[in-house]
Amino acid sequence: MWNKRKQLSPFKPTDTLIGHGGSLEGKFHCDTNLRIEGAFNGEIHCSGTVTVGEQGIVQASIVAEEIIIAGKVFGNITADRQISMLGTGQLHGDAATGSLLIMEGGLLNGNVAMTEQPAPSKAGGSEIQPKTNKKDKRAHKQQDTREAG
Image 1 (cartoon, rainbow, N blue to C red):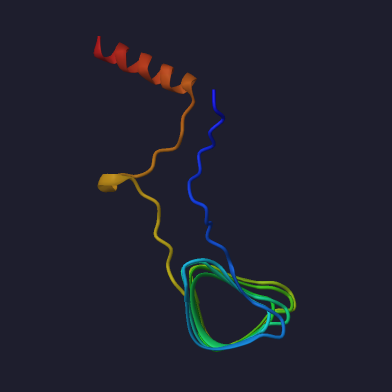
Image 2 (image 1 turned 135 degrees about the vertical axis):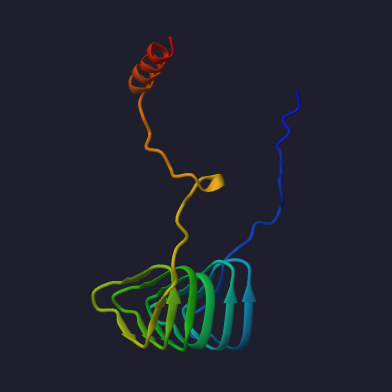
């Protein structure tokens, strides 16, 4: 009768931007993604992705889920998931991550520590069985009934 629309929340989490020509100094904590096109000096802790744009210059330690570098970063960085350095990206500092991607032209001056990714396993520590199709399952079931009977 009445066209009611379900509204979950009037506000959606938005990315944070430090724009070209802007500069910020201090400790920065965020739960969403952060993009830096200007200058930042200090410390960054982010639950999402930190992207340093081509014009971005960061002199800070960065801890985030994922880090993408297209500009210049001076400092040690840690990414839980992945660090990606684009062709214009420069990192002058140490990196710790589970996955590292450096495109041609990317510059890395520092040490890299790769964290071990946990192997997927089933509950109870049993091995993961390869998938079988229905035909193989039926043939296996028929063989089991012949052996039992």
